[in-house]
Length: 379
Image (tube, rainbow, N blue to C red):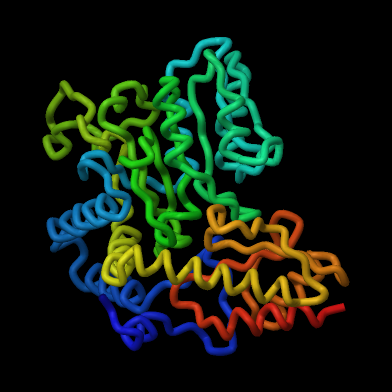
């Protein structure tokens, strides 16, 4: 476990900023910055002289991600470009039949909506469930399942409201009904404990550039071994075959592992950066990180509730808390408030009809309070 001083040394943000935007793009830790500098220097001086060592870093990253999400095997993890690509592998790879339906929520980020909507031309129905239709958002989703539901896809945390759903309950409901369970986990992995085996997920995907504190252009894609062959391949290349270094082989087979989804040359720069970022998460410990994230979320909620001119949009029930808090002002429009905060160097987002704050485990609570107080003053 790292000391408080060691953690502080990992984050060298401009002191004029209050950074509350990890649900969008996170700043890199110092070790990630250094890893990128060292990789760039090596490439400039030596080119690919040490490429075999780069491949070892790629495997180290997969092992770290396996640990982070408790995957059964490193073979279950592919490194892709982004969450949308992974979702597209699922949507494009399954053998759909007219009359099949897919259940999602009505709060999904476009990545977890458009990819399913494009299947309507193949006779597939997309059911967008109102999460407020039942006192339990989980039950609202489960109530939409029927005998024709082929797949259920949900964000572990909703990007705008910060609503966290009970993935164990939803996974159990899917397994009982033999429905494929797909989780867009970009808003939770790196901030909250995540266990693919406990939730009985079939597919999980997440970019590293948010809560994992990594770069854009690198994402994990978990695909459960037992259903891997159900996905028809939609991208092909030298890297996704079983004997990928035998370039003269005429006959080929897709890799048995999730590498079958990695069609071409890996993003080695991004991999080096992500490997450093995920190493920090594991050094701190995901249990410690989750506790700190939820503590800061609760603190932000309390500050907002005390502010006379502000109103919460996010739910405040502990079981639904994540790292995201969204609120609005009674005095000014949300876009106006967002622009004013950004001019004050409070880095946040305009989402879900309000202003979204998303502090990470290292964020100073005093800065959260300052950001809320400034939000309360605008009129």
